[in-house]
Image (cartoon, rainbow, N blue to C red; front, side):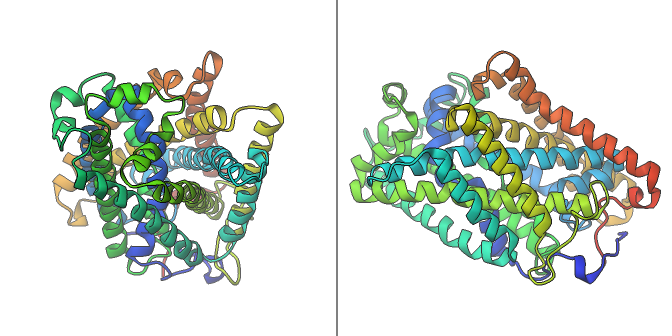
Length: 481
């Protein structure tokens, strides 16, 4: 395994994150309560109803298959660039440059998009307490708090996210247990896992909503340079993340369907003015208003945890792109005391403030526009990177046959997941307007942003190859200890 040297004063904070910290960092990016309260009811309504729980099971299994090759690669490429580094070492520097810009676009889009929903949810929560402020005020407050945390050492963010995520799990698990204990509306049923339910309605759209709910789990490898014993920590955190997120989503979606009644679920959702209130209605019915109030507060904290986690991911991608000269080297530096990617963190903060400010000035809806448009772009971008990573795994191990990894991990499973992701990318592109609510020109332009980012990244990598061939050949290499 070839490595790249970097000055000790320009490195991320080594040995600062264990398996638990990384797991909670990435689970918080997936924002479990947000996915359960927001994404799951919408996925049921627009997708396949009660069969949504079965789709969660299928997507969990697919992502576990993807993780096999992904973590095999992580044992050989320990670079905070993650997807970008894998693409660069497996498919070459040009592919690496394209992937780097897709990553920067995708995680920025996800973080800034969630800022819209966070602003709206916080405004609604405080309005109930007699404090009425526009959504964008709360978004800017969140941007400021995240800016401070992102600027400081990563283990501080990890501690905060661990507390918030545990609280999210507790309130939803309490509701799950009460539905399980009472037997739901008409008794416990395995119908949501039947093939007829899974394939009912629009299962393709349900698959896309499920994938969106998992976005963030793949970020384990971003923390490779900050992990303790990364060859052990990163694989464990990746598998733990997929299994914990997948089981939590699947069981909760099943109990939500059982709680409403499998046959009554879709009519109940269709009768709601806002389907994202569905989980809170179940809480009132089965667990009482006290839990519902707690859940409303934690819904906001879940969104905050998500934007903080995505901020950390974006900052590391920007930092690595600067450190490896794709972007100006002044970006690729770390703080002398915190060893955080502080310049990249500031850049992400400024971008978030500009975009949120633009949507506020134009009077666009924070949920139907800012959140929906940008998070769907992000989902598309991340799945494109998963496809690229799957192909990169195959090509990297073909070029490095002495790696002592078996063919199932390095060729068969990555090849199958590559094909699966290509199909899913096609489904997202043709359904983008329906998923995001972006009509006309925007329905074409928004998914095209991923292609535009790839082209920009390819041009940046090509320019680097011309001016500094040695740096180009070193793209994505692990750093020496």
